[in-house]
Amino acid sequence: MQKSSDFINFILPDLGGGGAEKVCVVYADFLKAKGYRVRFLVVDGRGIYREYVKRNFELIDFGKTRFRAAICPMVRYINSLSNESNFYLANLWPLTALSFWILFFQKKSKALVCVEHCELSLQYNFAFLQRFIVRFELMVRSFLKCKLMTVSRGVADDMSFLGWLRSNPIIVIYNPVCFKKRVEISGDVSYSGEFFCQDSLKILAIGTLKDQKNFDFLIQVIYEIKKFKKVQAIILGEGPERAFLENRVKRLHLENEVHLLGWASQIEEFLVAADVFVLTSKYEGFANVVAESLVCGTPVIATDCRSGPAEILDNGRYGNLIDLGDLEAFMTTLIDRSFEEFDSEMLKERGKFFSVERSGPLLEMLLISSENN
Image 1 (cartoon, rainbow, N blue to C red):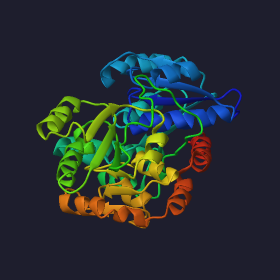
Image 2 (cartoon, helix red, strand yellow):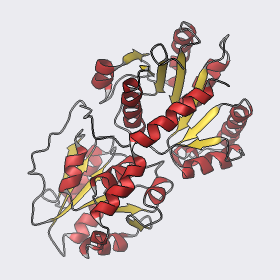
Image 3 (cartoon, rainbow, N blue to C red):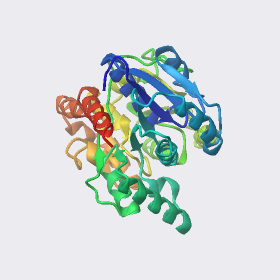
């Protein structure tokens, strides 16, 4: 790879507020600082990171809402690029599979890494025929020596099981955390220091407002804790369940306790201000916000869901892991403040393991190795 002339192409479905999009922006900043040119190829270029990407990198927006509608534009565009100076990082199935086959049938081979950010079997709940197709496609990609990367060992194990693969061809690189360079996003919530009441138990949760994140469960936890002590919870994020969650808050009369503030770029300031970060997800691929909490020295209470939290917290060594749906355990941990047993400096030290300075060079080496395929 000749840094001054090489393009790293990030292939994504969109530029929304999910963890995959955020991680790609962090990696893009890192690679640009290393001297590479960076381009984003996006099926639908809408999302909170659009303006940042347009301002700092080259953005190719195919303007399609369906993957299949983007196939022809992607084929034409990729075919117009020179083979020698382009490397590809495709993210999120089925776009990973689609990208591989588009590149495979080009006249010249091109360097490609396919990255899965979540357990496919949990995220898509495949029917029998779909599972067979995905299994066959993964086996073929592995046989053709496609570079497969995941963001946690749990995701790698799921992919190995789903595709009947040996686990060693799948590379695991944990997602990077980087607070050094602020990424401004559209609809950003600024922090004034007034969102938390100082005499309350200050709880923070972050994520897309969707069923996977299980924020309805968190609201129920707050409702129960309110009976015993003053509590306040801030949820940062947007998503399809906003109206449902707002109605849930109103029905339980928690308008003074639960605040849905939208997206925020400076989440480290919220994390530092909070007493504890809470993750109630039904499943994860990595759970970026758990690692971000450790970097800030903020205690974590997380569901022991598949796949990321237990790996990040080293099976409970760096935070509380609670069985999914165990309302009483969540309540007890919060009311007793047993999360305070974890030393802040110890958490920060663990957080360094997930720095971009560690993950970035690993990704760079993987891209270089993919050139030989």
